Length: 131
Length: 131
DNA sequence: GTACATGCAAAAGCTTTGCAAGGAC
DNA sequence: GTCCTTGCAAAGCTTTTGCATGTAC
Image (cartoon, rainbow over all chains, first blue to last red; front, side, top):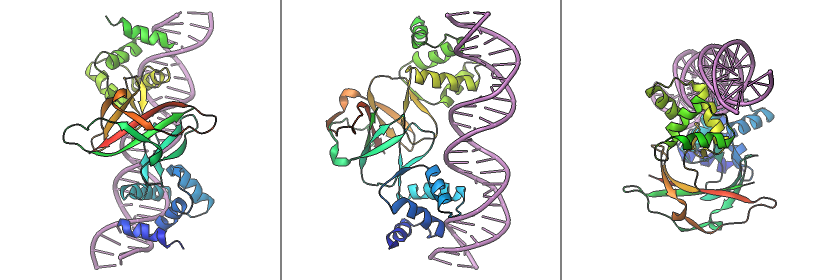
C-alpha cells in the first residue's frame, strides 16, 4: 500500500497530483536517500513516467518547503536533498560526493556557544569529511 | 606592507599576477570574511580595479584549490568562501544568509562514530542554524 | 468554478571554457 | 621562450518563470 505516500502529500497542504505521487514514490518507497534533481530525472526517464523537468524541480522545491524532504548543506552548485527527516549528521567524501548518514545519537556536543542575542538554535548539522 | 599577500600567492605555487594580488588584498587586508564571487565583483567595481568577472571566478577557484581560502558548505546555489582557514564552525541564519564564526574550541564533540573502513576523518564542520 | 499544478520553452543566475593576446618566470 | 593567466564572449549547467492548458478540490 502506498497510501502513506498520498497521506504525506495531502497532509503537507500540497495538492495531490499524479506527478507528485510518482516523484514521492521514487523518494519514499525505498530506504532513505540522498539525491539531486538529476537523480530524480534519471529515475523518471528509466521508468518512463513522462514528468517534465520543470515539474521535477518544482516538486522538489515544494516538498522541501513543506518539509517532506530536507536540503543538505554541501559545497555543491546543485541542490542536494535527503529523504531522512530525523535530526542526524553525515560523513561526506568530497571526492566522490558520497554521503553516509550518522544517527543523531552517535554524535553529541560536549559544549557549544550561546547563539547571538535575540536568536535561538534551530538545529545543528555535523558534517564529517572523510578521505 | 602587503608583502605577506604576495608571499601567500607565491607559496601556493600560483603565478604572481596583478589581478591575483588585488583580489587577495580585498580578501586578506581586513578581518576574516565570508563571501561569494559577487561580493568580490562589487568590491572590484567600487575600487575600479578593472578585473574581469571570469578572472575573479578563476582566482577564487584557484585560491580555494591552493587552500588560500576555504569553501563553506551551505544550501546555496552560489559558492561561498571563507578567508579564515583555521578549523572552526559557524552559526548560520538561513533567512538572511548571515554567517558568524565559532571558534574551534567553543565546540567539542563528546562522541562521534568511526569513519567507514578505509577512510579517515579529515575534518568536521558544525553548522548551527539560528533563527 | 476557482485556484493551483503541469508542460514546454524561454529566461535567469552562477560558473566555466575557448581562444587570442599578454605577462610571469 | 615557454607556459600560465587574462579578458572577453560564448557556452554550460542548474534552476526558475511565463503562459496556456489541464486538473484537484
